[in-house]
Amino acid sequence: MKINKKHLLTVFLIGIFGYVTYSEENVTATKKDVPAVQRANATVDIKNINKIIQTINYINEIWVGSEEVDKEKLYEAALRGMVKSLKDPYSEYLSEKELNELNEGLDGVYVGVGMSIRKEKGDYMEVISPFIGGPAFKAGIQIGDIVTKIDDEDIIDLTATETSKMLRGDENTKVKIEIYRRGLKKPLTFTLTRATIKLDNVEYKMLDKTNKIGYISLLQFGSTVGEEIKESILDLEKQGMNKLILDLRTNPGGSLSEAVEIASMFVPDELIVSLKTKYGVDKKYNRVGEQIFKGDMVILVNKGSASASEIVTGVLKDYERATIIGETTYGKGVAQGIYHFKNEKDALKLTIAEYSTPKNKNINKNGIEPTIYIKMNSLLSDKGYSSETEQAKENRKNEIIKILEETEGKEKAAEIIKEGDRQLKAAIKHLLGEKVTPDKKEDDKSDKKTKKDIILEDNKDKK
Image (cartoon, rainbow, N blue to C red; front, side, top):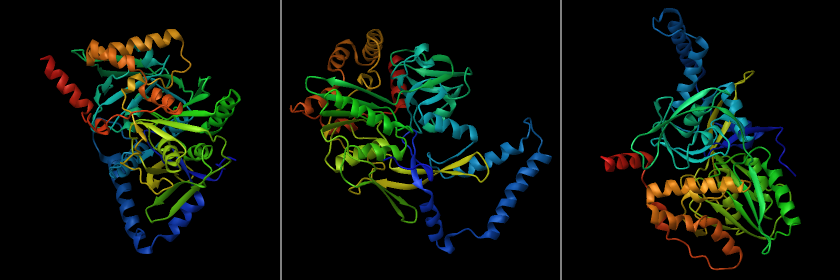
């Protein structure tokens, strides 16, 4: 049984992108429960709205400047300014185009440069992985590259969402990117041509036929991944699988309805996740459908596992249905609602709730601690490459070796490469009943340097 999405108001659980669904009826009830004293005074509202209208009219009628005045753009700027004043990186005004792009991205299809990124406000952007065959990949952008400028604009003060918008655009348009690469004295500049990117959100295979271990990788919680995950499980079971590794590393989140559906496939319990709004109204999401896999499980996570990824991880950890291996997750436990303007095609995205796991654990800014802590350089993850050719695999390995030799030296790089995907190896070892020795947890907090710090220190060493 799937969640009926027809009457659902879209709500977002954001890691970098992602959304959850929230009952429209529940939102209406919440508004009715708000005390009258907390509602805006109608007279004051009209007075302030008139100020906005008068300001836009003054600009349109008497302002002298070098720019042409467009009243629609002025109103849009007013909307963006109001939301930006909240200082909430996850709340924003969305034009019709931006809303469409957001929905397309969740379906795994969008126009951009084709790379997975990590970006925090106040720091530069790191390339987690250029997608094979995409514009970034073809141009030679590498895993671990640090993007400092887009179209000559310094991006350090931008959010992940704002940065992503700059990388996206119309097909066949160009975007200029300045990149810092460790080991090089000068930054590199690339001019990329945007193209349509199609991601396969779900990949799976029998990892070990002898020991009946299956593997499923989920890149993000797009709008149809629940059904895809179900089909993957059933196909793997036909091949003899009775143990499963679910790889949620560097998965920024997605649809809550899909997260609830996926979590329900692995647990017999009712409660999956709870959301708490501004006025204390709890919305509980119970399981949907039947549990279809009851075998031993490992979930792989890292610092890039966020939002919907953390919901699934938290559910299976709380109910002791899976061993969690990897690093502490991102810690994104807030939900955003999409509110469409009446008879219009643009919308507001606003943070409206916090969520917690079945055992009432607040994930926001805390993340989920793994059962077995294994630290690993994200460059070595095999996730997302299960279908690559041997030649592509060799090319990727050589690229990683080059990066590691530049940053770690040849001897240390050789050791790291030899270890390979330590987290995946630990998961296999655990499912085989062998002892897995965890790394020291303090190592998880040892790397506090920002991308900006790395650049400044490296440039200082070169002088």
